[in-house]
Length: 149
Image (cartoon, rainbow, N blue to C red; front, side):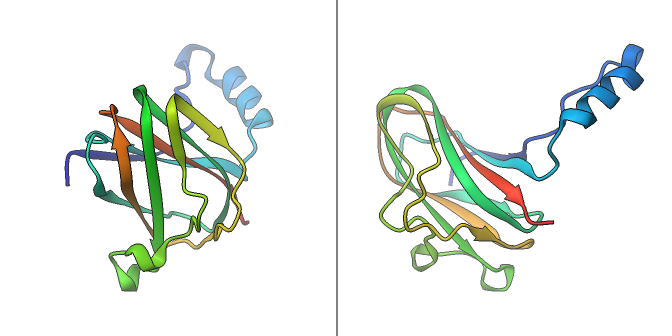
């Protein structure tokens, strides 16, 4: 596996000069149920397993996006299993026949999750596998989720 980065979408940086005003405005508008899990792939120019992401909370996937460094093609399969069964395998795919796909594009955003298993549980492990790729070098896979509080 190549170099990978994983992250959660974080609360934006707050300017300490006007912290109280900014923080209260931000928190009033922030929906704590909707967030995203993001995974950056630095070697998206080759197929295979690219790495893992630990699910930090119970949630349901509501959509995804793929953002690439250049226009190209890629098909990503997503596998999920409980931590006790680590690592997830192709038998644990959650995408059915509707795998996230870029076709001669640099980005795609979709809420069409036909056949997907969308429920994730805190502690689950997500694996990202590139089934096919052309032209890309870097890829950001984002799963938009709604926390189940």
